[in-house]
Amino acid sequence: MVIRYFKKEIEELRAWETRAAQLEKAIRGKIARHETVTKNVNILHGERLTLGERMADRMADIAGSWGFISFFALFLAFWIGLNSLQLLFRPWDHYPYILLNLILSCLAAIQAPVIMMSQNRQEAKDRLRSEHDYEVNLKAELEIHELHEKLDHLREKQWEELLGIQEQQLDLLQKQLELLQGMEAEKGKG
Image (cartoon, rainbow, N blue to C red; front, side):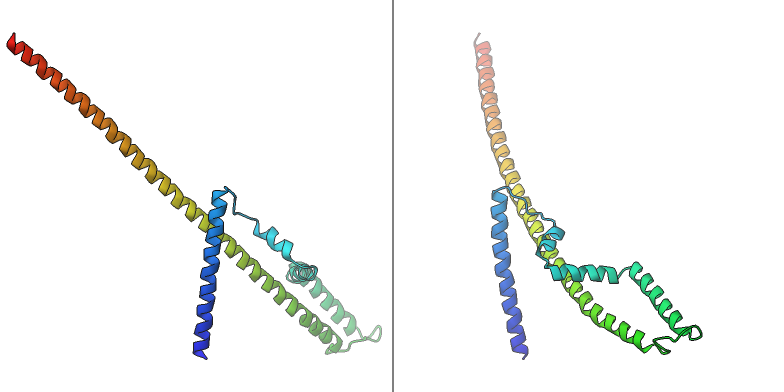
């Protein structure tokens, strides 16, 4: 059992390494073509949602709002108040409000899976955002590496140019020294 677990983990790591290598190759291609990597993950995630998933997300948004809680509190107060007034008319749901409990149970039974589906999609969105962040960070890292290489190349080129200029200056100084020595030798003869 433990061996199968570790084999599965190793396979997942190898698959991730393969995916990372493919991603790095793709990013290097984008750098070479001067393409951007950044994307709006919210739009990208929204384009992938089905109608049912969008409806579930909307339902989770509504069910998790203060407006819904306030409305439902008012609905409960109205239901209990209306069914507690036995003097005016015959209530349809006597205390302990079994019909109300049934309605609340049905609502909870429907809301729980919808909210869980919405949370799963949020997790998928977070995973997509994480992968996108990895791509952006990888591109930035590769571009920084290329900039360092360019700067190192420029620095080496400047050093070569400076050495060339220094050699020219030394040659000029050597010629001037020879001229001065020749002039002093002529003064000494004369």
